[in-house]
Length: 79
Image (cartoon, rainbow, N blue to C red):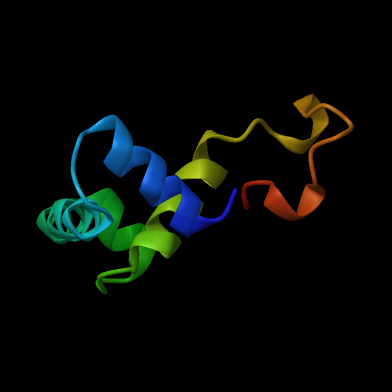
């Protein structure tokens, strides 16, 4: 699923627009900038929504040895 579709689904589930979803996500990401873990992950810069979601997904991904065979190794978390 691409980012556009993800944002459309989130907007539909929340009875709002994609633009509003993007705005809310950008505000949430910006408000996290002072968190030490956030600073470590992004080097003090504010990532795009796409970068942030990819980072979050990779952090939640199981380690490569625990992944099902159909999961792409390009989406494994970096240690």
